Length: 172
Figure 1 (cartoon, rainbow, N blue to C red):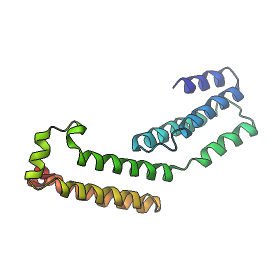
Figure 2 (figure 1 turned 135 degrees about the horizontal axis):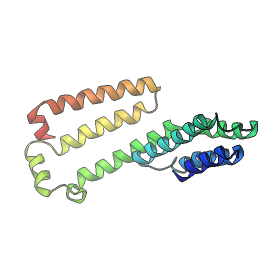
Figure 3 (figure 1 turned 120 degrees about the vertical axis):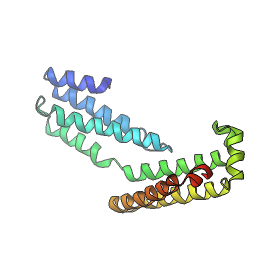
Figure 4 (figure 1 turned 180 degrees about the vertical axis):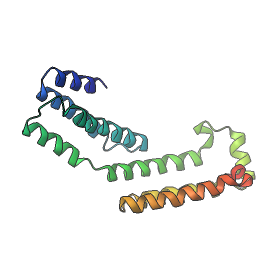
């Protein structure tokens, strides 16, 4: 947010190159999260990149960026690879989920809830269902965005089906 403010101040003071440097810093900051194995880190990365894109759009009326600055910004936008980052984040979530299912007390889940879930037939079935959903999401991340969205809708429908049944909600 400070870099965003700095870009606005520089642009309004007539320092287009300084504003471009601040925007570049925002985009570079987002790029530092590229290899993080958590989905939340990838979502933050996308949000920070979006802030950089919005800065360019918002400051165009106030700053006359040089061709070199525009090319540098364009390159930063072009090299962002969200697909690989999202895939890495989903794989990380799958690992965390597996660990949580195997060690429910360590995840802040009361031991009684884990026992109740197993008595009602959950446990291994829940892990299986979780892995099915996450594996489907990881696989979808390697396909086109429209195919990935379709896979997400299928998973969403299955989750809603589970949530619509009181027995299934209690079990899972």
